[in-house]
Amino acid sequence: MKDQIDALLNDVKKLPPMSNVVVRIMSLVQKPDVSINEVATEISKDPSITASIIKLSNSSYYRASKPVRTVSESLMTLGLDTVKEIIMLSASKAVLQKDLKGYQLEADEMWMHSLVVAELSARIIALKKLPIPKDLAFTSGLLHDIGKVILTQFFPGKILNIRDELKNMETTFTEVEKKHFGYDHQEIGLKVLTAWNFPDELKEVVSCHHNPELAHKFPILTSVVHIANTITVISGIGIDIGGINQELSPFALKQVGMTDKDIEALFTSIPEIQKQLLDLHRG
Amino acid sequence: MLSRDSKLINVGIAEISISKSPNLLRTTLGSCIGIVLYQPDSKIGAISHIMLAKDLMGKDKIKFPGKYAETAIPKLIKAFEDEGAKPGTYSARIFGGSSMFKNISSQFLQNIGENNITFVKEELANRKIPLIVEDVGGHEGRTITLYLDDGRILLKKAGMEKYLYKVR
Image 1 (tube, rainbow over the protein chains, first blue to last red):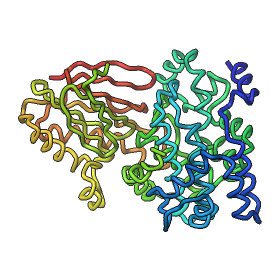
Image 2: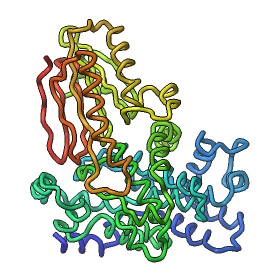
Image 3: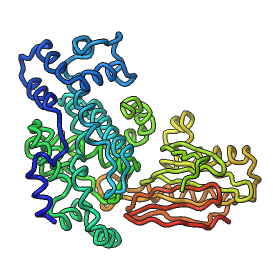
Image 4: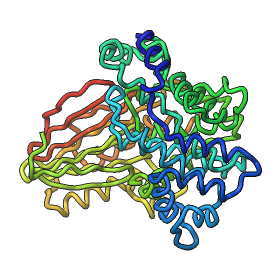
């Protein structure tokens, strides 16, 4: 099984595609002196990203202060960080809104789960006044489960063993994945983001979101997404074959300074958060 | 099987939905509970998807009664009886209420599932609504689909699925 997965991971053509324009924009915006014109020019090379930036800029979620008709207007009204977030949002949708049959998760549920974790991550940053840009928290939350998109196709051959494992429930589901596939979805996600040349912050979150204590470079950001994901799974949004077969890391709570009251407030606001995200869910 | 005339209605978190044959009601549950009511003669059914037993702060439940069992259950019963289900002619089934695998770091998250199960059962008993089927607790996620033509439920969890036919 691991050999088959290795073969797939080593063949870039078999990984989910990411627009070259998105990859170039992601590295362009890392430059501190980048100009709005440069970014707008690069974006205009991808008509579908251009269209979604304009559409999402006018959505009720982003609420641009005046109608946005062009990418330059979007950049000027919403700012570079928000446009970066919108680019990641529209690029991720194509990859994440997939039926994950192995995980018993439908495309819309997977996409809603990703959006809710993204939004909760952003809200935790705001609530605890953490020095992390909102768009980075949102994007990290959005992409955390990307490895499942790949791993799902290997479930059919192992489903009986996995069912047995779930009856006994002695380990977390990532350990079950690792045991039967040789990789868990975190490791696969890391490979995908590496193939796309995505930033280190996103790579660490994706590879450690179930074990934030292993995040050595960005422990706070990884902890934020870990907490957001745990709350979302318990609420049942995007809960998959693994159920709530995971742990809430005390390390993560300490890093972020989360109290039980904070968790309760976020958990109970999930129905309102979901409504707020409907615009983005429809895309 | 979904016939051409039947509609599949997704019941979101904190929502209460009522419909009748030949439609289907569906919801996905973690620690939340799906309370299913069904009246087999008129083939009316309802699902209330509650998140927590009670609102300890006391304000949120006024705005969002569907979130909390203490306010959702009376609302569910009233709406169901307003649709024509006579008291004493229907029963309840409950699903969900999972808890985390291992967790000592958040009392709140750890207890949601168990608290929900206990409270919902008490409330149904107090209101003399017979509880005829339950699949609650554990660590699994559950998706339930209520087929209003005969009241059966398709329960999916942990990579398995099965039909539950008991309706009275």
